[in-house]
Amino acid sequence: MRLLTGQIVELYDAQQRQLGQLTIERCEGDLLLGTFVAGLDFQAVESLFRSFEEAVDLQALSRVEKLDMAIRALGLHLRSPNAAGRLEIHDVQLWSDGGISCRLPEHNESGLNVSLAGAAVTLSPMRPVS
Image (tube, rainbow, N blue to C red; front, side, top):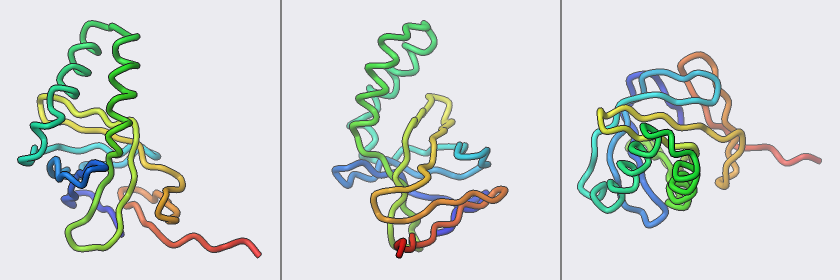
């Protein structure tokens, strides 16, 4: 799975609900930035993200931390419509203006190694150490 600037990927949760689509705008280290268009299943989690945004605006840090833990518990990951596999993500922030940011893991549960090079993210199978 290769992620490129301008590419559209789908956002899923651990319950396999397609929450929407993310258009990748740029990568900065392990930070992925883009725009989000909600899917039909997003309504199931929308209030969580709106509460998070409100807590951030109010600088209610203890509430932000609790909501962040609840968002992490969703098990969010990305899938490309044209490729097999999934990419676990964390530190997901989804804003009411359609902006989205998330962090990419160095290693994920599917055994793929993530390396960032400019605006592209390439996943390759990890090789066992002999």
